[in-house]
Image 1 (tube, rainbow, N blue to C red):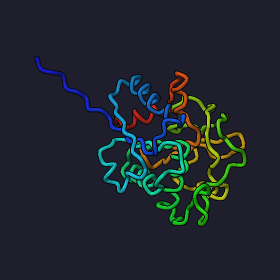
Image 2: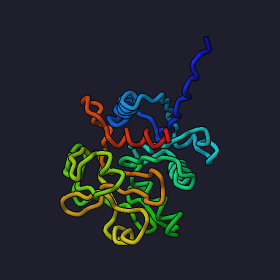
Image 3: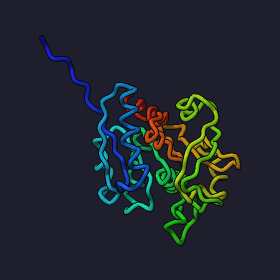
Image 4: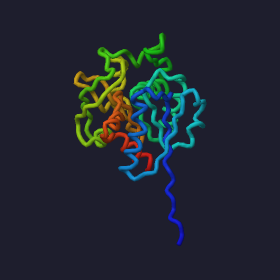
Length: 235
């Protein structure tokens, strides 16, 4: 009797500087394992420190990339390299919190031509596309309205969700207006109209959220976007 073919594991790159004390870092493996079990997919994942990413070649063996929370990163260039690699190679990409912020910066610099696009937490010069929030969202939750017929809305199956945050920075008002005509579409807002999620509509799966939906796994709840992310990687 011949052995059944073994389905190779999906390899996911978790790009960021792992810290066991970071709540999101505790949640991410659980969220991936739970989603993989629901989808019946074999999945492996590697934590890649940002200072270990020197070029796109360091990401060539992965089928999907998640730029994880806990910035400032040790090496911003490594984080941006990961975003660009996923964007240019149609690799499923998920960014949360700091990953969301740096996905915005990468797009501003390399697609929109804003070479001086900057992050107010770490930069003193340039155009601040990521700026301090009017009110801190550290360990807070909020209602997010989702744009209909988008990847994120289909993943959740509804047009309004409540998720938690751990951040002090978001998209600046000045840059928000620049996104209105871009393929990097705003797909989630808070009740004040501030940007909380984006996705690149010219890409099979490129989704970034300021909120940390992966934390649901710590409470035994599903993380719908993680399921959608793995499903996209399996395609």
